Length: 195
Image (cartoon, rainbow, N blue to C red):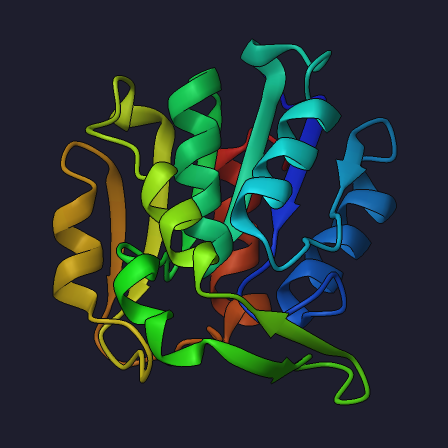
């Protein structure tokens, strides 16, 4: 069944202005204008981010919706697919952000707009822990693109997190998946039945 609703969740310090998000938005607008596209700016609080997302997709049809998540957005997307069993694409997904982001407590700047500041609070670590999803009930509905060359996250940890899912393990690559447009965008669209 083709996707009718598509949610994109960006990573830590990122935004809807990320290259992958913009490439996806452009492809949907050009070839699938009938698809409802939503790429919200996520608040720093994980609890607030998930609350906003779950409210936003409350009326979406579960069988024809999908989620794409990059890095921390991949962790959130894993939670969303656990709750909805929707198709999900994960791009170098964070597996244990409560551990990894503990060293970022304090003042942060936005990646795409250094003028944008936010404070990553200590209580956000507990909020991340509360969102940890167990094994997925529909792992076959997940497609993960994981780069061994990721300079931020461990590819072994990412790969091990999604048994039974379709995993594309890149021999090199980087955290941003800089070759997303040329090497992965078409396959993501195909997985979503959006050719």
